[in-house]
Image (tube, rainbow, N blue to C red; front, side, top):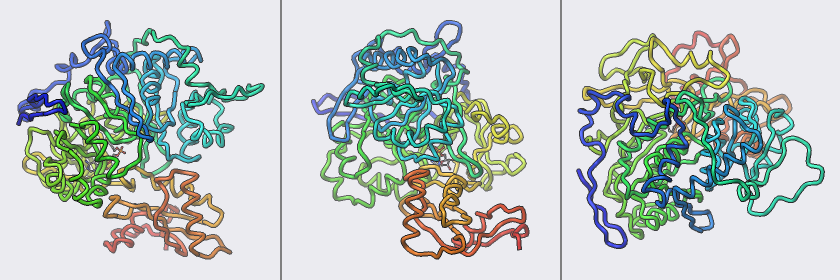
Length: 584
Ligand code: WT7
């Protein structure tokens, strides 16, 4: 089970896995027994950013590289834990100077650059709540999230700021735009209108690198991530500082982090994976993290794996399928022998992906299952446990997972039902921002209902079956059909729209829209292109319908709700099921 590592300078070391016996640990596990894995202040206070940064900046990790940043132009910068401490302190001081206090919302709308680390962790240090926005978001998506949370400040770049400028008049609470820019910002005459633009580089230069961290309570809110459901607008999933305990411990036991590792999580910080396993989990373990700014590109990725001697790699099925498509030959051009473990998350990992990984990396991809709401990995394949190809694995120690029926009763082995989790794990969401009612609806009969359908086999392995709701997973990114439909009907040509996820070999699912046009419009290729562009611009570049079908009308219930289930069944040639509520 141990692995031997040889680095460029031929140093050899042998690693023992952090988790040697899954069953034994699971049997007697209690979260209380691992509280000392992280560092607490007196009186049981806890700050996730302190754990991620400061506790390492005062021990032997002080001069260890925390962050390797490879810019899109290929330039490489390295930051030690002490550097990170100073950067995050400086940012905390910038916020303090602006009067931002505990509980206020600070958003990051940034590409994958080091300012993400400085501002995310700096926000946590003042006790404010950090949130992120995926850089592909358009105006509507931004307005929903910034408006719902009453954001006080947004950290962004000049390029992305243009999209904020278009909606800022509708955001009365947005007071500051903190602009990360290579060039000094031109002082604008009489700049008094809200929001006020702040020069990140200037302020960071001037700010003190000392900061007294807010002694937050483990239950204090730390970060807020918007995600999509099947109905309504996106919901703000609220996480507490306590989440860091589970992010830390899962990263340690599942990703098997060791001091010598170079770890690369390919997810963007606009999504939960980029936060929990791009920032908090690995840094809390004192890891060296690769931040790769460039876009997906097989040769670019392989050369990054080689150049940085990546040992642990956490990625997603769509990326794996795209690498498979690029072929086996190009993998031979690179030395990928440093890889020790490889992992996957976000959508079902097909057995073909695992077999291919074994062929080209000589390693199996370990699938992990979790959600924005769960804050960290809950079901997983552990390095010490045999993999059943196609299974998500087994629940992490301390996690009770089950398959339940519509009333929340546990179902027998090998029966399909709702995947459910016993509430109370440390990184569980604490509420939905401003919507406690909707939050309560996530639970049934003492279980948290995940929205996924699954079955559990006789050995306790969980198998993913599909979503129980209409949530779409395209290239691993979660998209709510209602959000897409809302934007579609704003297009002048569209009277009504229904949106579904259509299975796709490469992307898992693609978004397909069924639209009925207003009188006077006829379907044509230009209109189709125009609709796609409209959704990209208003909602998000990743959330536009790759397929559009023009229909005369949409199947609706008598109460006027579009029957997506029926659209999907018809599209896929499946049985239509119960259509007694269909309007005519
Ligand atoms: C949904 C959560 C959690 C990190 C990124 C996604 C799907 C997630 C798996 C997996 C099959 C998976 C589920 C889940 N999903 N992991 N290993 N196998 N499906 O977070 O955007 O909140 O999406 O992603 O449907 O509910 P998210």
